[in-house]
Length: 304
Image (cartoon, rainbow, N blue to C red; front, side):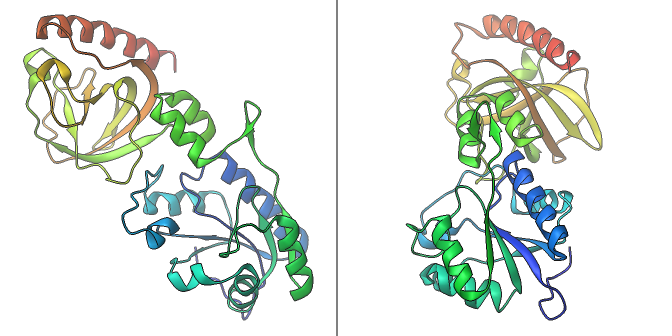
């Protein structure tokens, strides 16, 4: 995407963090493209590379659905004309809505029409409503349009709702709202090789992005991609209680795969939840359960 050019173009814009660029965001951006086309404007999404709360609260650690790089790629796929990465600052945080709309959106970026998401606020006066933004727009010569929400099972889709589903292990519901399977990427590192000793060698994912949302502890059916090839995978997230593990790990057993991939990049797409993590009486009992998990994982993958 190229940089917006307010000297030669005017814009229909919307603002958001767009974490995950989920179905709600795609719905919003489709509305934006339609509005821009109707008015002869260019479409522009204004987003934040960093979570605004990180600027205001230094110890805040967000749990994200997409890395900043992946977010920009997903935004580009929506077909909007421009994406403006706005680095949130304390000065921007101190602006009221009128100043932000006038000095930044209108004068700096050339925004003529502003599409406001159903749950979005900007400016330090967060008590304002869409009607207030429309009133300000009328006074400064900017059209303000409220966006409709995208519903899943009767409720609006949001990044926070998807995170809650992931925390509960509901990766299928998360995928339905994202529009794609939830994905984690990282480098394969050496582990303790407990799985290999039981006949289930695993690729240990790490370091994974420290800010990414990790699904609930448990076993998952997934697809794992390494070196351009995708394999069915049984993924375990948790503390390996049978072996008195102290640190949380993400381990993937790639079905039918036997190759050294240490220090290669591994991508995991979560397909379905198999079972919760629990402690077994012995490694032999765990191995028997893993064999059952592997069969179920293959069934899930085969059923697409």
